[in-house]
Image (cartoon, rainbow, N blue to C red):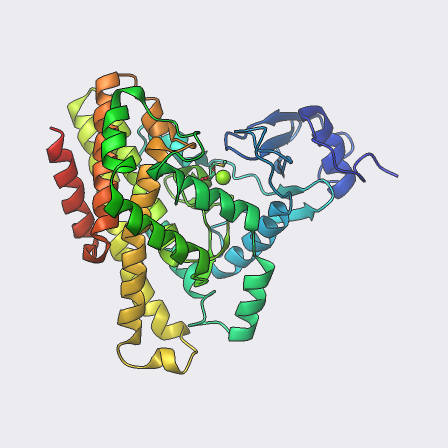
Length: 408
Ligand code: SR1
Ligand code: MG
């Protein structure tokens, strides 16, 4: 009998015993210390360290309710999905995800590689560090993990088994509510709207019927388009990074959904980085360097995704009909339409929804924050309403510059 045979919410002081019992990861004479380092909305993340050797390991532990809200209960099965998906993503994008050492369905915990010498990308971005290789790495990650899990490339029966295995009702419901519903009506009365832009939000979001209709259509596409095994939450808090290397982690929202959801999330979150740099960096040269990098990254992510996708499609296509001339162009075009729409949805929901982003909420000057939020909402609406007009990186830069110009 072990005290880890029945689920309980582990605390910092439980982690050393837990890891040693499950894996015997450290020698018996290890001097183990533990800290809780998670800053997400859902889970607890512990780093366990042997002070004698410096060796570390990570334990990600799922609670039965969310960190962000005690009232929101979600299935602890998300850890199983996450562990399996990290293994799949590691197969298709080797070296770009951390290694899982153990998944424990009882304690709902994953023991995994510590991404040492890497920083959470949102944290680094808020220190205005730049990562010129990010667009290269993230475009490879997305093309490799997404295309390989579609019907284009996979055996259709195996793919259907995957759809079944990775069905994730609780996590999908969060996205359906927080991304695809509440930002347009506040129907659950839990939106976080920055008071100085309340009137703007009412007019531009809650009262815009044409926008609501487009979002409604997109919601039903998200719920029914089992296109690929998507990460499902590919924001800069799901990336650990340094100048040379990128790790993508935290795929607990993964399920079979539209590819554009992942690509759009990256685009939107890189623009939050631009907003933070624009509003908070005083030195003009530093501001230019950081903000230019954020925009260049958006442009490169789109263009590199397209270029790599075309090459990978030709190499990986197995379905007879998907080899038909013109199919690849049509298929990619549908992904690009979804990408623009999802960039818009992520932009808007992070400004007015329940889960905001620190890039924006930490802008200390009220007027600058209000301006940034209005730019993002305006841009997000443009992405959604004109989603079929975003065919390359330059189209995004043009739309961004237009939105900025409206509030100059
Ligand atoms: C209630 S969870 C809020 C958000 O945090 C996660 O990272 C997802 O983005 C989710 O929408
Ligand atoms: Mg997360």
